[in-house]
Amino acid sequence: MADRQVILLAAGESRRMGVPNKLLLEIGGVPLVRRTAEALAAIPDADVTVVLGHEADEIRAALTGMPVNFTMNDNHATGQMSSVHAGLAAAGKGCCFLIVPADMPRLTTLDCLLLLDAHDEAPEGRVTVPYRAHAGARQRGNPVILPASAAQSVLDGGINLGCRGLLDREPDLLHAFETDRDGFFVDMDTPDAYADVLADAARYLTAGSERRHPEWN
Image (cartoon, rainbow, N blue to C red):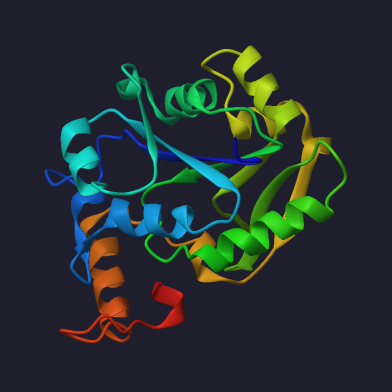
């Protein structure tokens, strides 16, 4: 069993995006959920558990052939916290749990490794969260890393306690990873956001080629 557990949250209904399931929208010919999963599957010594819910069969099909495990969240309509709980309950034991929303089009394996390195350097028991200064304020990003003790606290706290709720209750657990890497802060919730991602990707993805800019691997 791997020492690191990765939980990919892919159960949401994409309400802000509208009719299409944003996780199935393609960037450079690859569905968003698969792009994110590919970045996670390349993390050394890590098992990836994908939490399914809305359009579960379609999401599973988009991940065909990938070295990931699946679990179903029958309560996905209640919100993301239920998917965090479902993922933590299904994942194996590990020293830490990387909680990853699937709509992160610029997240790379390197981003995840840098975050994991920061977590390894943090005091024991801390929850590692990426932050940056943005527009005169501090912007919180994703993914979040829970140590095993915090993961158990989230599970014990019931469905209304997620990662943010745990830190609101116990702010001393926060270990802020200061970074300006876009992969931690770019998501894809709306049609406008998708258009921006496509425009940005077009600068790096070569038409008809597998060659990609490192930021888009």
